[in-house]
Image (cartoon, rainbow, N blue to C red; front, side, top):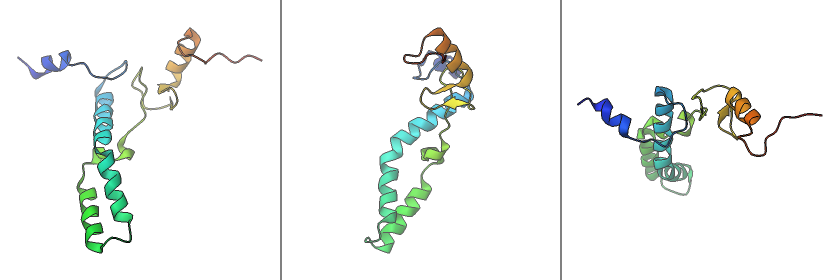
Length: 116
């Protein structure tokens, strides 16, 4: 049996549209969340001037050797409905078009069309 058949049965905690970019972004978010405490601790050690130079250097080397997906700059805001990476509202995690469709349909609580 092909390995892709087992992937189809696996349920991922991702929103609507799923493509390779959404899957990659999701894996980056999971890796970042798993390594966030360790990364913050190492950053604190490297910036603490009261520690010895050797301890700070070891912490800096370990920080540099961590995987790139554990960095917060690797995470891109993507639309949870369409998977688009541009024009995403941070508060709703939706792109402009999906926000408009959901707001007009009344699916977003507290959001209504402006009229004056």
